[in-house]
Amino acid sequence: IVICEKHNPTIPGGHNNLQIINSATGKTLAKFEWKKNPKDGIKSIKFSADESYCARLIPQTAADKMNAIEIYENSDFSKPTKVIQSRF
Image 1 (tube, rainbow, N blue to C red):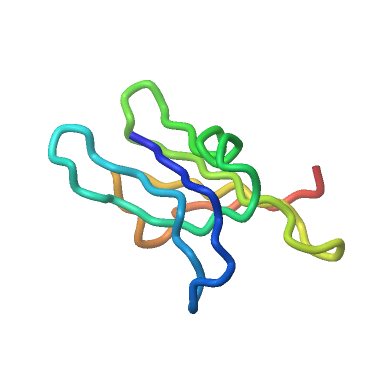
Image 2: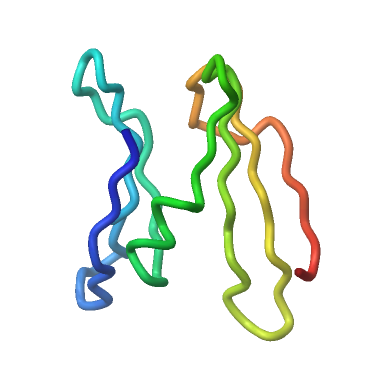
């Protein structure tokens, strides 16, 4: 399950408002900060049909920065296995 709530910039140290939750156990697998519209946050996470891969869109944060897509494997969200960067 992917959930996203409105970003709150007043929370010290950032606000991990985008979460991935295991529907069978209720355990939170990953938390990320999403500063844009919460409806878009949910769309920024996509799983493969067998859920062995997860792709996460990271939007451009400044004019000189690039967008990125992080690829995670086997529900391990500690570090992406691949990162694709581009200006799109």
